[in-house]
Image (cartoon, rainbow, N blue to C red):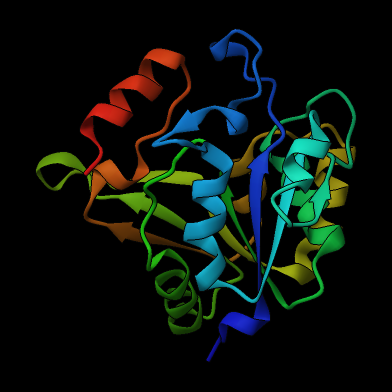
Length: 202
């Protein structure tokens, strides 16, 4: 059984925030706290260790009391750059990633992904929301749990110019873990979306 102590949680806060006008998304307030703090409080109880991946305002992120690591790749190379940074710094057999802009993600995200990984003997698990009217699940690839041993595979993929999560995960044994509450995966790419999320939050 995969125990929480064997899992490191990584909060992805390294993006440009281009759809928010270039501001640092993780530091925007939601319910009176920075978005990234919601992720810290929600993910922390589900894992043994926590890390933050950020490329700007490192002092502000470090003030959360969680180790902060910038991308291992240059030029804001996207979520896979954050994955790679997490794998390089991870001291546990498993790494799970969540974005900083989705403050209501499930409180049982990690145990359900861990259970699916074990049941399917998989290397990577990705969350998904159930499709409307029984359609295909909508995969949420930045909610991803992976074996730390995949670091060399990801390093090679990114060195060859790969940037798309699904093209890398397709090289490995993956399991998709469906969640019923689509709202839990609502994210804020723009300030308007952040305000809407604040209004709909319980």
